[in-house]
Structures are given as C-alpha cells and as structure tokens.
Image 1 (cartoon, rainbow, N blue to C red):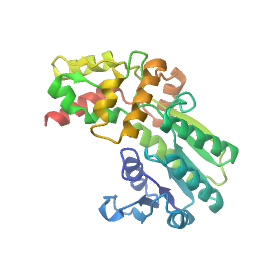
Image 2: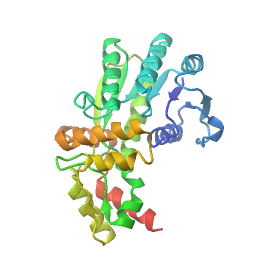
Image 3: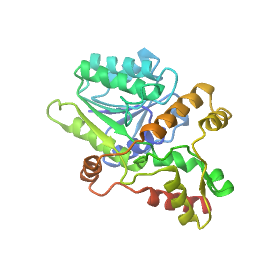
Image 4: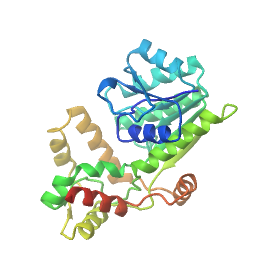
Length: 291
C-alpha cells in the first residue's frame, strides 16, 4: 500500500511528503531530478515527468493512493488529465487533487479554469477523489522581503474585496490526512470537496497594516495597478506566467476570495485547531527575515 505524491519538492508537496513520512506511510515522491531532491528518510524517490506517459504509468502502477499537484505550467491541464486517466486505468483506490478556490469563477485565468476542467473530469469519470480548493497561499508573501523591508511596500495587488489566505502548513496537513483517510479505508470513499482557507479577510491595506505593526515601520500598500504588476513580473518570470497572474489578481480585485464561516469551521474541525492566522505567519516570517 503506497501513496504516490506528485509535486513533492514544492511549497505544498514537500510538506505533504514530510507529514506522511512522519506518520509512517509508505511514500513514493515523484520528481524530474530525484537525485537533487532532499526527501525525508524512508521516502522513495521516483524519477518521472508527468508528460512521460510510460514513466508515470509505471509510478502509478506501484501506488494505491495518489496526490496530484500540478505546477503552474503551459501544459498543466494536459498533465493532470493524462495522469488521472492513468490512475483510473490502474484502479487506484483514492485520489487527492489540489485545485484552487473559486476554480469555477475565474474563467479567464488559465491555471484556475484548467483546474476546474480537471474537477469536471473527476466528477464525470466518478473517480474516488478528494478535491482540495486552497485559497491564496500565505507563503507566497514570504518572497516579498525586499519590497516590504527594503522599500516599505506590500506589493501584491490583491485589492479591497478580501482574501482568506491559507497557510501552506494547514493545506499540507489536511492533504496528508485526506490521503491517509483514503489509503486506510476498507472500501472506496465517495468524492468530496474541501475549501482550504484562513480565518482572516485580508485586503492590500490590511496586509500592509499587519506588516507595519509587526515590523514597527511604515509599510504602505502598493496599489491595484495591474499594468505595473505584469511588467515587473515579466522581468522575473515568463510572459505567459506574468499574464496568468495578472488575470488572477484582476479577478481577486473584482470578486475577492472570501471564505464562508462554515469553511473556516470545517478547517478547524479537520485540523484539530484554528487555522493559522496571517498575523502569526507574518510574525514568524519577519523573525526569519531579521535573523
């Protein structure tokens, strides 16, 4: 009985792997370059690319449960659909798929609408899956040290409607528990969907204010200028990715990504504690930056 984890070297996947390994699960972690990966003791690295069908088929054939996490790439949708078709063919007993909050609403955002298509395939194929819909990751903001501490600006153009940002640790904890639940079940479990959210409703202004209070210096919100964001992002990322994220922020500014109270309550029930707050994340991150 083996759990196969894709995306096992990233922000969420690495935490899922560590969580499962700590609980004694038999974990295979798929990676393009496993020789460069640093997995916990007992985790079996598997060399494969999700666009390499034979390698992926072989990896899935050794697994009973699958964690499917696709990075944001131009072929993300193709990777996901092909991998799920192989999982269906292999008869895996459980799947946990990492989708995204508001997957069906942000129809012009490639990596959102792609994930919604994957959700539709899961439903149409009647796959035994848990679909996780995480909100914006708090840990995305861990990369903002230079802007926040150096320039005194919170630069993410998240707008004023509000986001219920989720901590990556909470996301990974629930992903791991969902995998173990399906792995250890005596029979196939029905499909379910879980929204992974934080307890706060954050705007650009409130995020800046939290950083100001924690750092003891004036941090201002950089504003909602998406032209400027896309231009700056394109200097560090491919143009298609800068455009994708510009479209995401445009939708966030228009609709927000605010969790319902029942979603926050379910998070607390699944975690066994309240979901982590953005203030706590920011305090931990600022301490790490300052050290």
